[in-house]
Amino acid sequence: MASSRSGSGSEWLGKTLFASAAVAAAGAALTHAAFRSWRVRSRVVGIIPARYQSSRFEGKPLALILGKPMIQRTWEQAKLAKSLDAVVVATDDERIAECCRGFGAEVVMTSESCPNGTERCNEALKKLKKKFDIVVNIQGDEPLIDPEIIDGVVKALQEAPDAMFSTAVTALKPEDAADPNRVKCVVNKHGYAIYFSRGLLPYNKKAAVNPSFPYLLHLGIQCYDAKFLAIYPLMKPTPLQLEEDLEQLKVLENGYKMKVIKVDHDAHGVDIPSDISSIVALMKERNLR
Image 1 (cartoon, one colour):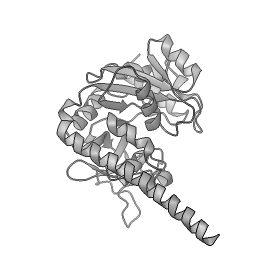
Image 2 (cartoon, one colour):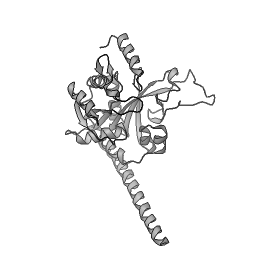
Image 3 (cartoon, helix red, strand yellow):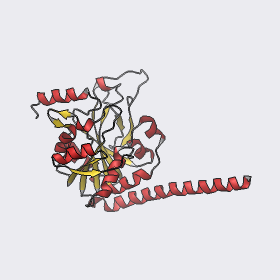
Image 4 (tube, helix red, strand yellow):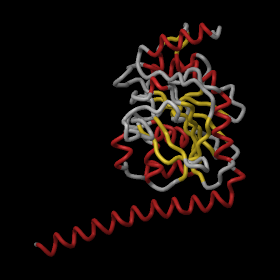
């Protein structure tokens, strides 16, 4: 019996190692292919993942901002991006789908089991009739997203053949330093991400915010090589990803490069209901309708 258990264990280990090696091999092949054919990464789709259920703000995509659902305002901003050949909403909720079809958006229905926006984008991409080289994951809770930022992350990925992913950061406001909903980022001197955290990055030995240090705030927009996006769900969740609850950390933990652009942008994401009033006040200040 001991011999039988040992054999089963060896067989299980062999299968696990084989599966891990297969994912690694696919990733290596993808990186090599990117170096050879990166110039053809020209067809770009923007996908706005949206779900109704949320622990912090249920029904958030349908929350009204000066008479329009938040998801509509995000979609309208995304449509202004020059780099996108198409913009679609990916959702698992018929209420959101009906709303989006009502203002003219293309909608792709996805399963309720998608664990995050990245995997929802991957499922939606598979259901689209047209083929795309780059996918931009546009956060549905960024109703004032700047179209130029979308264009910027697309360009950054197109010009970085060794990167499978690109994103954007801006200056972190001192009052947001301790807010876990404001994700911080550190970048190397070549413009590639080192790490993301809900805590302050970097964190000094004085345990205090340094007013002269240029802390960076992650804006949430994510841009992927379409072939890499297909590999992402095959990767097992990683320790840092699970601890921080940040899906982009799985990319870094698996050794892939992520290009980061720095932009001048006031982040106005909606995480909780009270954020709506801040968006409304800003829109009125800017005479936006």
